[in-house]
Length: 443
Image (cartoon, rainbow, N blue to C red; front, side, top):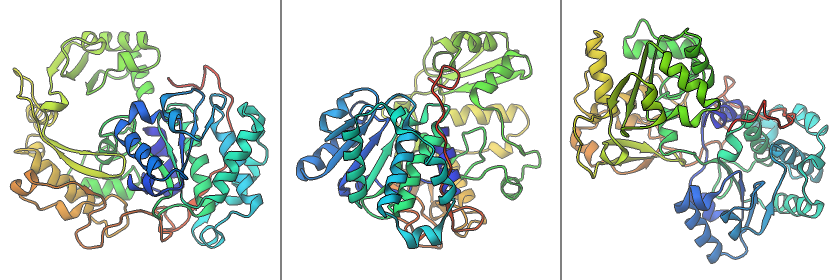
C-alpha cells in the first residue's frame, strides 16, 4: 500500500482515507479503478451489488485492462491500456474544468496547485489509453453530472512504479469538484491485504514512524520522548527492493522477515533468495513450516496464524475491531509481539518491551496517537488509551479518529481542514504519464 500512502500524503499531508464503506451505498456513481472487487473484496462487492439492485439508477464504472467478474455489475467497462490511468484522469480533470464542474469556493480556500496540474494535464494525449471515444465521452458525462461519486482504487493502481501518480490523478478530480468529505463521495483506497491499514498506523513502513508520524525532526523528537528512546531512528529506512539489494551486497548483516514471503512476492526472486541464504543472520517468523523464504533463512521462529492470534485489526474505512483467536496455539508457536519482547529482553531492552498482554500494547499505541496531538495529526485513538483489560476484551468496533478530548470525525476533509504544514491547502499534483515498460512496472 506504499503508493497509496505516498499519494495521500502528497494530496492531504497525511495518510488519510476520508470515506466510509456506507458511501458506496449512498453514491450515485461508483468508479472502480484497478480493483476486481468481486474476487478480492467479496463482502464489499456484495454490499455494492445489493445497493445496485435496490437503486437501479446507480451507475458503476470499472476501469481495468481486463474484463473481470466485477464487470458483471458494471454499466461501463473502460478497458484502458495498462499504465495509462494517469492520462485518463488528467483528461477527466481538464474536461471537468472546461465544463465548469469546479467547486470554486472549496478550490480557492482549501487547495493549491491547480494551475500547474492543469498545465501538465493539457499536454497529455488521451489516445494513449486506447479507449473508444464514445466510452470516454460517456464516462466524462457521468462523472461531470454526478455529485455523489466515489472512486475506489486498489492494487491495480498501487502496484506500479507510477502508483502514487495514479492515486493523485484521481484525487485531483475529487479536489477540483469538492467531492470529498461528504456522504456518498470521495476517493477511497481499499487495502490490498488484511490489516494493511493497521500496519500503516503502527509505522510498519520504511518511511514512517508509529501513529502516522514520519521523520520530520519534531515527530522524531516526540516519539523519542514518548518512548524514552534516545537511539531512535532519525531517517527513513530502505524500501523492500532496496533492502534486499543491500542484504545481497553484504551491507546488512541481519534481517528479520515477519508475516510475508518475499522470495515468492518480490521481483527478482532468485536474488532475494540468494541474499537471504548468504546473510549472516537471516531470521523468519512464520506459521507455515515450508515456504520459499523459510527455506532460505537460517533462524526460524514459529509464529501464529491469523486464526490463532489475539489483538486488533483495522480495515479500509479506518474501522478498528477486536480479533479473537478461535483455534488453539499449536506447539511452541507464539504471537509476534511475544517473540519480539523475548528477543528484546535478551538484548537488554526487556523493560521497554515489558507488556503483559495485547491490551497493554493497544493502550500504549492509543496513548502515542494522542500524545501532543490536539488535532494536529489525523490518527488519534486517545479515547482508548486508559481502558482496562476487561474493556479491551469487550472492545466494540469503532472508526478512528476517537480522540479523548474532541468530537470524532466520520469523514475527513469536509470542512477543508487538511494536514499539510499550512493546515489547510490540499495539493493538486502535476502528473505527467510515464511510458509503461519492464523497467518501471512492479508486479
